[in-house]
Image 1: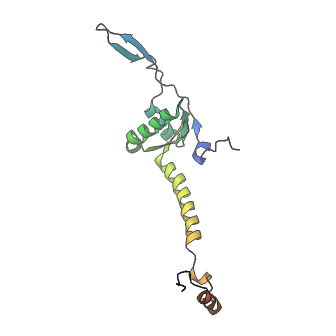
Image 2: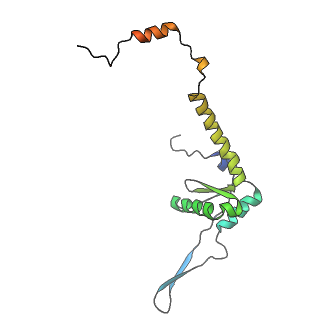
Image 3: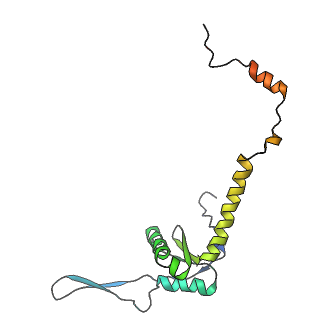
Length: 152
């Protein structure tokens, strides 16, 4: 189990979409400077199309990138450009990029945060009625030698 990756709940209910990155053709122009243009312009996957697909399906979708850094850049790009415009949220887990409508993201992650808050509330906020101090406990504590008392 040490090598297994445990996916978040949102990935388990998401659909996998194929992702085709841009490919470039490089050439030199008349001045001898290197130029490039996208060779698969008609077929490469656009991030906005993935966001629109998530909205159309009204459920999360995800895709793989070859490198983790590219997945991080895609997540940041989608959250920056399409979060307000289209109402989608992007998350990342290793090389996977998850895109989901913001409404679904709030439902999933607010529930998770509520669960954490409830656990903390139970752990740290105990009622004073459950604590039972007796006079014997007070006397026992008073008779303990003090570590701060100076001995001559």
